[in-house]
Image 1 (cartoon, rainbow, N blue to C red):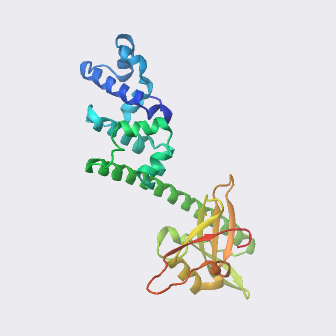
Image 2 (cartoon, rainbow, N blue to C red; image 1 turned 135 degrees about the horizontal axis):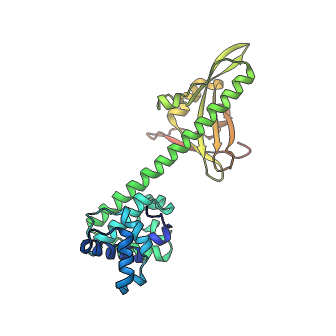
Image 3 (cartoon, one colour; image 1 turned 135 degrees about the vertical axis):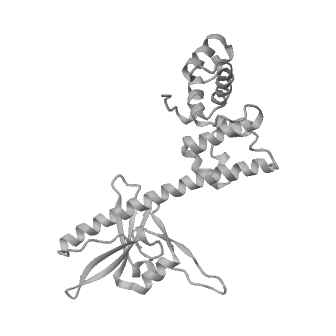
Length: 278
């Protein structure tokens, strides 16, 4: 099995050129495996001395077998394979737009994108399509990570509510509504006492790693919260902490941050700060 290599080695022209050399020799020696091809190249081809053939061997497992081996399309396919299958941490920034994203990279990485013809101005349509395709994959990965974080926070709230109900002596488990109904307007159905009667309460769960702490609230969530009132609360989990930290807010505490509609405009989501005084 070929070992995974660091992104800084994989995402480099010596790695890309090494892949080209490995596949050239693979056509000539189809019975040899990649490690044997590398040994052969190191023995007989002086070009191999300046290339990162270990990184190229791993790149070989990422890039499609039918990848074009010449011209700009080769480099573009290599970059695409690294972004989609290796998923470097900087790929999250691709959704910011081409030039804004590239400015966040070091000079060597910027040079790779330029060598692949991906920074041409004005860009031809094949380059535009490349950016849209690859940025779409990066955006999907980011969305998946956000969903995983949100589900983790919901599980934390389920655990918190289980413990709270046990302390209150309420023999009912909380219900994970957010898993079954994305339009319910809350994530957890739990219980509490009011006037010695057990009542239902609704919990909207948010997760954030932002600093200062803040979270987004949709209009649908707020509509539910404002209708339910005291029986509705917000669990906001600070997921940046080693042990996630819970902040609980009531509807009345969130109300001052809710915007109003003006003219024909209607708000759909709002960013809520979570400072010590909010």
